[in-house]
Length: 275
Image (cartoon, rainbow, N blue to C red):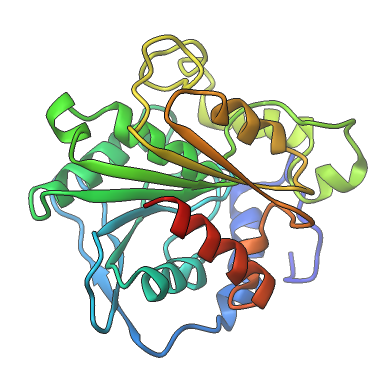
């Protein structure tokens, strides 16, 4: 598969899908802010490693970030452009986590990694924020839900961009939706690879719409107006303690365009509302 090929999100192998994702322009040649240093976060015990983005003049609360990719592709490296610009705008250190991917690792591996990552950071920082995009937004919620009550109270807030993880769309399916991995067949494929035993639905640990799921005290949901799974943002935004921003005219992966002025404007708005 080449960088220009259309990936088969329904039946494609994880290797082909990852090869395609790793060849995307914002991965190969990201435009990064010059005042943000990037360093490695080494694994420690049950906590996976990742990348750390440290801005000059750091003053904000640390942010633990979880990348998107349908639980199958993606890494801190593929999402450098997002984490780096968040660090630049917030003047906060962003810790981008390398959680395990499906289908090699099925649920609850991703949730376990997320909890371990946040617990590790709370041992160093008394308070922090959670952020994530697409599937990573769900991983961020699993992180919060799996914490002890005391540690959960140390999470200042969460900002979730285009949350995914629900097998649903907000409009009639089209071939174009499947081509970008956001049609119902693609979403169902992710779920089969991630959760073949069906442990997520209805679980107070893994399903944010289930009774008893522990959401962050304050959560900002940022949905894209032209996202086929925008209704996932609306579903989460109906929960207690949430705020919703709909980025009109934007698509699911609009943050990949950073530092494009339109994407930057929506990112600034999301981060300002989160405080």
